[in-house]
Length: 385
Image (cartoon, rainbow, N blue to C red; front, side):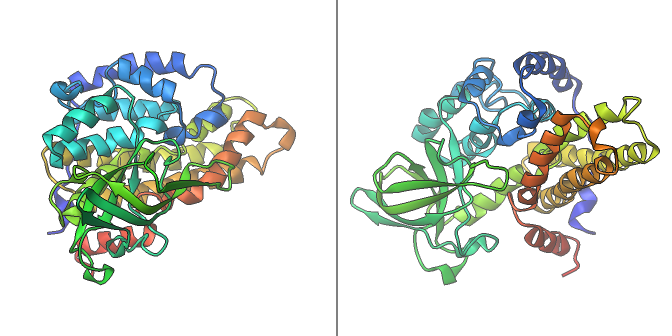
């Protein structure tokens, strides 16, 4: 029996589904003046003001305990919220990582002092985190990280480099996977997670401009950065187990399905008009929707496993791989459809949105785990290697 046999069709509970109408009403108002090509940035969009508005409504940390500033709702309620934010193209990038994985990680493995200090600030939209995993020579091969935190009398001294660190130039903190003992040849042994205050002396953040002109990816350099004694999350040397469990949250959510959804919805609006409707366009719409529906069902089923405290690493990898494949297919197929038409009849805003998503789409299958690595994980889970 394969790892995937345990996935079953899951329905979002009614009390959580009921949140959708309130979220939609808020987002319709909040995004009404944002053009589609801006909304298409989806969870890459960045607005601290918007994040604080969500925090004031109790919509950051929706699943976190009330005692730490959260709302104490179910993971399915958060799923509804995230799904609608992505569908509207709301600029949620500033708090995205802190809400999705940093605060839950601290709650699961952190000290009581860490929980009390960081988590309420995340829930208010006042503390933003980035993830320090990939390195120039340790991207897909994450276990070979060389960034090192060496214990000293004041805590740890941090040296090394991280890359592809989303929004590091906007964030106050990074949760970094570092080596606290041994060497890179030791693989999983000696890896730990630490919280790094990015304002400390010796930290340098350099944004990387991508094809679309955005600069959300960053390089981060650590040059003899003195960390305090209270920065370690969980047990020393347990970083690999912690980070692999964390990746299930990163790989299985709606953000692995809907990065092209604003473009797709805008194109559908055009196809519904007399000048936009063609038989081939209707067939393309059906092709996308018949792939999107089962992928969403898989994503919801993985969410159920996460709510039960399971760690569906392979299932999450499958959602991410199939989801990003669909996300990349959408702009390519829409471009083929539009460029077969008379250019004078095409809406300019639709073309601007297509331009952005096309330029951004190569990153969809890189962030959160590269395609080759995920396919290897899936093959092992299916007993094929």
